[in-house]
Amino acid sequence: MKKNEKIEMDMKKLLGEVWNNMAVIVLFGVTVALAAMLITQLFLPKNYESTTKMYVLAKQESGVVTNGDMEASTALTRDYQELIRSRTVIEQVIAEKNLNIEYEDFLDKLLILTPTDTRVIYITVSDEDPYRAAEIADAVRTAAAEHIQQVMNTESVNTVEMANIPSVPEGPSTMKNGALAGVLGIIFALAIVFLHSMMDDTIKNQSDVEKYLELSILGNIPLSKNVKNKRKVRR
Image (cartoon, rainbow, N blue to C red; front, side):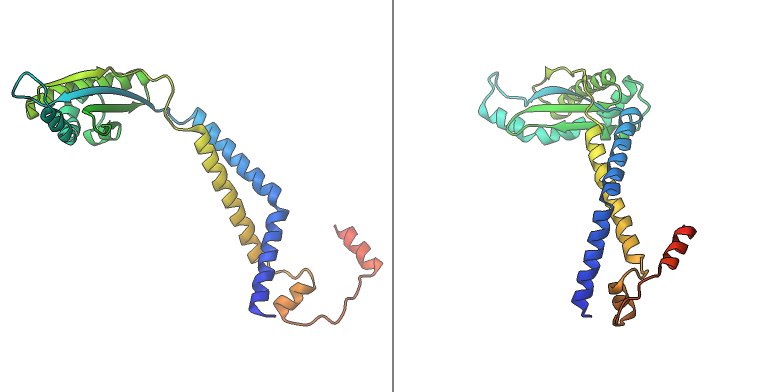
């Protein structure tokens, strides 16, 4: 038997095993998905996000805001973002709100974004408590406004929007976790089927004799009725 023929027979065997166990594979995947969804819904902590917005305007020489002032404010946006994330601001908020959290861990809860061509800075804070998330976000905005004015000598830092109190958690996603767990469960079940099929070297038919023993089959000897009956009794 040629090597390509052996590979073709092995693939047929594997696909046959998968098809024969398809119901078990799908059932296992569905079970894992439902278990993951249940764990996500009942045991994993919810994560709420609250966002506040601030507007930063660079200091101008005259009382009129010029295009140069607008461009300067936009160019300094990255500097403002770094100032918001500074230890001065974060540790002030931690002290004011009496939070039991380290500076580095707080940064993981903080997201700062600035839309293109704007001077509006979005400050988003995530927390397990929606009310606490809003309070912390407003505290960060207030502390950051003071720090930016002191360091950058800006004209003003104004509040565009107070922090909202989120009503719907941002995560973890029950459906996403369930879908991911279901896919992983199916992959795991397929791996078990493949492994069992590849390790199974028992001889079941004529093709197995030719494959494993490399012998030609001359003929078949049918079992007598007595042998068949004895097998049934043993079973």
